[in-house]
Length: 196
Image 1 (tube, one colour):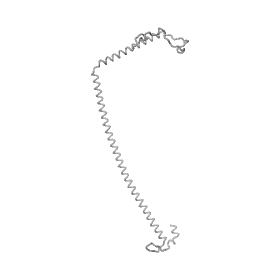
Image 2 (image 1 turned 30 degrees about the vertical axis):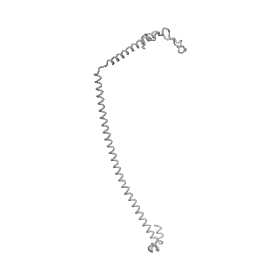
Image 3 (image 1 turned 135 degrees about the horizontal axis):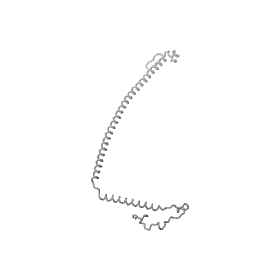
Image 4 (image 1 turned 180 degrees about the vertical axis):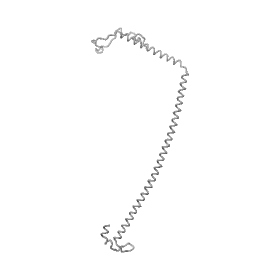
């Protein structure tokens, strides 16, 4: 604008202008200034139109996205509801199945107990139980005799004096006295028979 103001006289000077199909006489500066103003108005109009179109499209896309998001949320909630209903139904079915199997197992156990109570004990089982009890009594008696023999054998025991070194330190092996040797390998030290 300052340039136009400083050169106003030159811009206002009339000139012959050829428009292609006719000739006119007009100031060249003002014609060019008018064309520049017209182009600026067209450019601003185009920018405003483009901005308006983009805004309208953005709003339309935002509405569509909101609608799609709402549909997706509803579908997701519906899937969760269906899944929960399915899981509840399966849990009920499994609980009923476990309860039925538990009742069946308890009734079987009760029937087995009643059968065992009503069934007489076999003679073979009774004989085996008696044999085990006799064997246990025999083992206890042998252990008692062995303890008594050890007590009697240790009653006259006198520890060796401190000056006597043990056989393990002198390198000699222990040889039992002839009285200590057991002549019959089938007899234990207290004289009872050793089972073969």
